Amino acid sequence: ETMNFPQYLGQLGLSKEVIAQVEEVSALLETSDEAARIVPTVNAASSPYPLDEKTARELFTYTIPLLGEGGSCSLQDRPDPTPFSLLAHLLHQPEFSLSSINNQFKDTAAQLWRLNQVMDRLSVVSGAEWAGVYSKKSLKDGDGSGLIKLAYRGSISRPIFPLTPEFAEISNNSWVGISGKAKIVEDVNTYTGPYYNCDNKVKSELCVPLLGDGGSILGIVDVESWQDRFFSQPVNVWRVLRVCYDLQSYNLFEKI
Image (tube, rainbow, N blue to C red; front, side, top):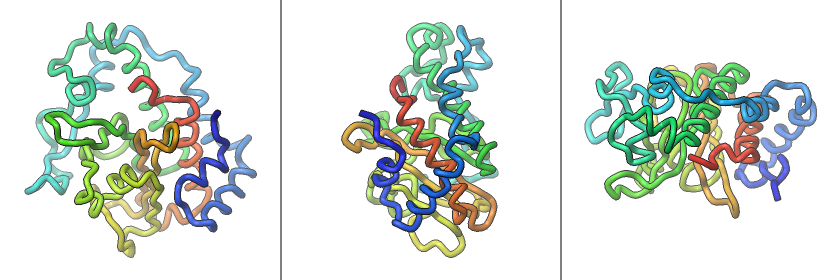
């Protein structure tokens, strides 16, 4: 049985004050705000099929920054000349194959298309400068589990966040991916918890787990703003949480 929105909020580890504010906004905007229509609209749309090569490459590969010494820091001004491949890291297919994408992996392609549409619309509706969705997966070469970025809108960023206690000490994404609890960073400059600096322009962040049956962690959604205290505003928090709730309710991770 699908949980309702208030039940969903209760799973996220948010303060009672934040939950009350978000529920108040939800009661006012549930039937009128575009955020509540993003996932239902995308889910009802027909994904393109068969994919042409340009669209397939846009869905299954993306540019990433080089990492600094030790692999902990993104070098924003230095793109990696080799694009990151979801075919390789998600589907264990070392070579790009349009035929495989349109046949063997057509369901995955359709879901990636939907997730890209959702991130695109979320970034517009929320007014945030960056939005991305990650799936919790076993990593290649037996490197444990991690969060693999499936779709995003905004600046280039690292594709994988390891789910280790060590990385959770410096990364909200990893912390949320391990704990299954949401994290609000109202002001990056005064925040004292784990924070992975991908872009110096980021001023405020909201990171939310995507949960499955029994509270299992399926992935996360991370949204970042260049505006001070952007996520101090309950309406901005609600818009992101509403989309995350709908992603779970419509099982958009089902075939990823």
